[in-house]
Image 1 (cartoon, rainbow, N blue to C red):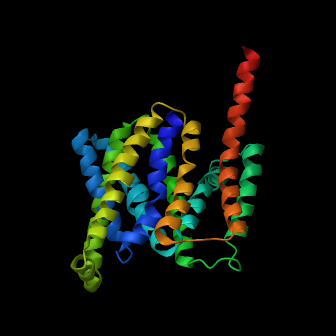
Image 2: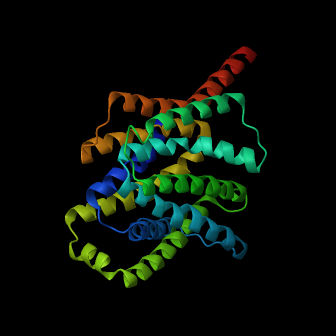
Image 3: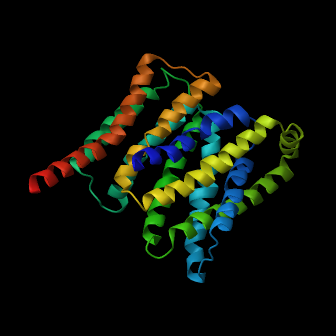
Length: 296
């Protein structure tokens, strides 16, 4: 049951790319990031007020910059420059980059199982993102790599601070801090590029409002509340299985909202990447269950 619940936030996160491109195609990423993060953080603060201790602010500021300000901006750059399906599927490679990061910087050698499926995922991604087979915006691809880096670095800092700062405090205040920084950056950008912002607000439509509410309330407020609540009740491995809804939502939303279509070969490569990202957890879970059955 918890795995099914974990699919809900993953599904909403997966729709970010198509919903943004469909309802907010001309909006600046800095403005979108600010409107997604700051109101959500304030809503979470109103639901459960928290006040960080003085020694917690430096860590929260780092997380606000990496997890929210940088990551949200990059996500919206991807949403506006790459097909929804490619963005959703591409982000399943996060575990592979995390494995390489910890291997290089923490000297944590990956298990043979992780290394095998990591190499398989990279091979499938190489075939899927082959420039001779599919034309992709290089800015969007660089944004994807940078967003993956933000996840890895931000997760490392979050994990290190997990025993010292309450989860809700981290969640709430990184959104507020990151959202505030993005709001300041958006204001500065509007001074230098006023026409872009004038056109956005002059042409504000019901579709824009629906898109903003979807991203703000469902993707962020509901998504992150469920994320924190579920992680307290299930293992990270189990939560990972729910994450399959993320790329699936990216593919489905791209097809429904944007009319995206790919060849059967490309869809098979996408499915292969999703399965390769899940197989280490699936095999490890089966092995643990077999060991428990043998022991009992």
